[in-house]
Length: 347
Image (cartoon, rainbow, N blue to C red; front, side, top):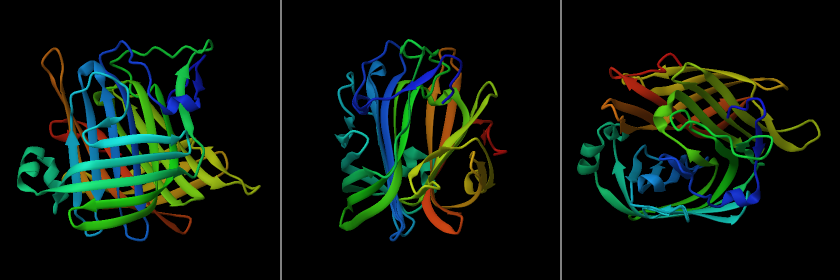
C-alpha cells in the first residue's frame, strides 16, 4: 500500500460489508482467508472475488491434506451485482465486524495426488477425481486490523488508473479458526491459525510484475505478514507487520520497514524454501521457510492489441521457523511469465 503525499488511510466497521460498484471495467471486491492446524499439519485457503463489470465472480477453494494431497476448485460464475461474497458454492459471512467471520463451501474439490498436475489445469481436472466437499469454518480475531482505503485530505478515495491499480483499498488481519472440512468420507476438524484480507477497487493481476507474499502464524501472540511487490515500472514496495507482545505486555502490530527474501527453487523455478530477513523499528528477525505442499495456478488475459499475458501464482503451504518457534502459513509467489520463466526469478 503506497501512501504518497496527501494520502490517508480510512477504515470503518461498515467496510467489512459490500461497497458500491465503481465505474471502471476491472472493479473487484474480494475476501481471502487461510488457516492451518499446527497439530494435524493441514489447512487451506478460500477466496471469493466479485467482478460485476466483467459479468462474473471468481471462487477459489484449496485444501492441503496431511498426506500431501491437495483438493482444489476454481469457478467463474456469472455475476452482475455486488450484493454479497457468495458464489460458486462458497460464502463469506461477517458475523461481527473485525472480530468474527464465517466461511462455508459446498461443492466439489478436485483431489490431486500430485499437486503439480495443476500446471496443466485442463488435464488436471479431467484426470483427477472430483469429490463432494462441505466446509464450515469460523474465524475469530487474534489481532487488530491493518490497512484500509486510501483517501485524500477531503476523504475522497484516491483515483488510480485501472492499468496501474491493484490494492487501493485493502486490509489484513491474523485470525484463529475453528471448524470442519469434509471431503467425501474424510472428516477433518480444524483448530488453527491464519490470516485474512479484504480488497475493493480496480484490480488486474497483471498490473504486478512479481510479488512474494508470506503470511504466517507461530502462535496467537506471534505472527507475521511479509510482502515484497515489484511493479512493471521497476518500482518496489516492501510492507507488512509483525504481531508480538510489546514491553508492556500488550499485543499489537509493529510495521515492517525493510525485508529481503532469498528463495530456493525447484526444477520448474518454483519456490520451495526461503531465507527471510526483516526489520521493524524495534529489532531484526530472520525466518526460514520450507514448502510442505505446492500447487501452481495461473491467470491469463489478452490485451486489446492481441498480446497475451500469462501470470503464474504458486501457492505453497509452508512451515516457518523464527526465534526458536515453529509456525505455518503460505508462500504465495506471483510472477509474469516471459519465455517460460518467472520474471522475479532472482527473489
